[in-house]
Length: 147
Image (cartoon, rainbow, N blue to C red; front, side, top):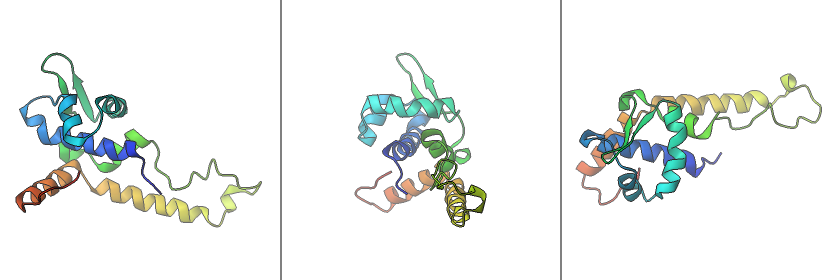
């Protein structure tokens, strides 16, 4: 499975907002400069994040974005679900089973089980965890790190 750029960028965008929102709403241009993502693409990615209640857009001269919840209450799974949709390794409902009964498919439980493991893994990681990791990288003097 390959995660789309949209999903990876969504995590980076919300992490950037989490890092800088203590100074007020984070302008799109700050996120763009910090993450190397075009402002137009940020706008596209942020819409489903706002729709799912993960962040809030504030209009005006001092506008920007802020998280709608505490970083400890937003998981990577929440972000990926908002940006990517349903996360399945294989969409058996759409798969061509060549006329076979999908409930008798021998490999279906394999793909569903793997999808469940991935979901549970992403549910365990919060924005707070990623903020803590970023702080550790900064503290250790890492010249560069990527979020």
